[in-house]
Length: 107
Image 1 (cartoon, helix red, strand yellow):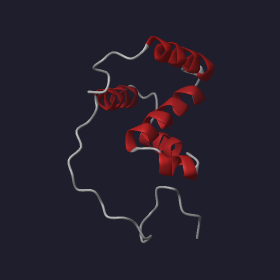
Image 2 (cartoon, rainbow, N blue to C red; image 1 turned 90 degrees about the vertical axis):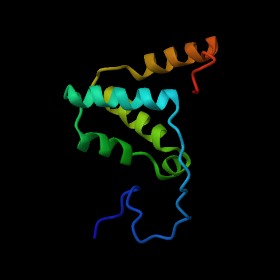
Image 3 (spheres, helix red, strand yellow; image 1 turned 90 degrees about the horizontal axis):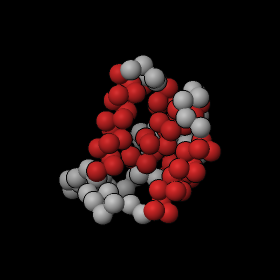
């Protein structure tokens, strides 16, 4: 039998599933919109996306949140396909963080 993927947790012991409603943050809504555009335009398909998310190292996967993993997977695919340059992305992200985020960026 092949080794389990990091998303294959069926039958393993786990904590209780949280049942409270958690509203999406502004950036999470934008991540979903970006995913939908890229997918509908054929930039990547669901199998590629799942592979990218599941390629996350186990420790990093466990520490990250749902939307973080998906953002990282989407970014990895865009870099893999040569659509964006990782060094440029890092540089631009650092510049935005130096300038500070808008007050409503987390709502």
